[in-house]
Length: 273
Ligand code: C2E
Ligand code: MG
Ligand code: MG
Ligand code: MG
Image (cartoon, rainbow, N blue to C red; front, side, top):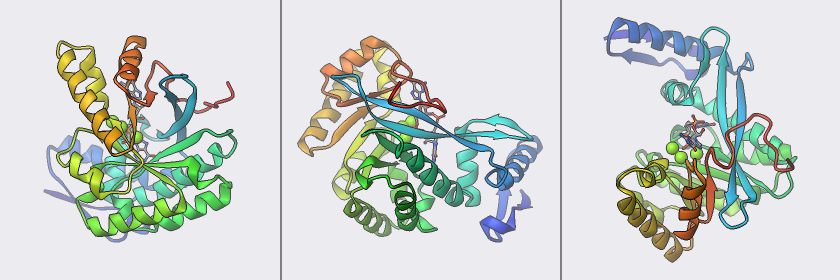
């Protein structure tokens, strides 16, 4: 294995061990190097994608999705740079930036909530509660209009700490949503353990509606909706690309819909359009 010393200023003195071919290793090092200066170089940008009410089709929330346009590497997908930042620890600083920028933007909207994705590492290190409070204070956004999206991966390490933090966030009035629901392994028990307001059914279930296994996908969505109603949770379906999927999901009892059909993530999205 090859060992590279990563940016010591932000991530602390951490050693990275890369495995795989030379080419992959060189790319990973270039990515880490470019990411180490991306925040100060102002290379990140937020795009917003609406979540609409399944009945009125009006936007009630917008999810902040971070984009990176690197001076050296060009546009990179979050699927690539978020895991790299999670490894280096850079996600702590980016996470605080996203919270602040998302709240500042949402404060200019009327009523519409903003949803911000959190990484597991933000629960383990840094000052998540402080970052949230500062973002709300700076922007003046009412806590009820901030939604935090977590995945069950937050529970892998120190679940007690996570539960305490989520309880504190709920006490502030902030909403917490369980993202990518149905893709993990402990989905059902986690709903009882964590103080969440709702869940987002993973896009793969919606994609399955269009495929041959339609009845199976419908049955699974129906059971997730039933469970959510019993637990008084809001249900969102993500990845809705066609009108008929939206109709079906609404008939299955899904509360909110999100996907390209209702709007692609965009840097200048506003509910007043
Ligand atoms: P996610 O939170 O599940 O976000 C939904 C992803 O699905 C987004 O991809 C969005 O652009 C995409 N999407 C929305 N509607 C459709 C659709 O109709 N069809 C298809 N095919 N895709 C759709 P994106 O923006 O590439 O983000 C990927 C993931 O990166 C996110 O998944 C989230 O886990 C992570 N991410 C994005 N921004 C942040 C951030 O600020 N912080 C953290 N920690 N993670 C982030
Ligand atoms: Mg999300
Ligand atoms: Mg998701
Ligand atoms: Mg997803």
